[in-house]
Image (cartoon, rainbow, N blue to C red):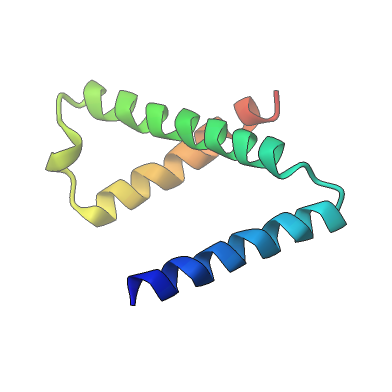
Length: 81
């Protein structure tokens, strides 16, 4: 049931938070950095799509995946700053 899935998912999140503590990683900082990285990549993709005068809905799933891979490569150096 959905309630069981939610409970298991909560357990998984708790386990990840405990693992972060064990590894001496602040889970909130890690999530914030990951979210910022995702935003930069997604914004990069949006820019490329605008350059081609298209919308995201125009792209098949496999082309979006390729754009995402390009975004990862293109933003790698920026993310380290």
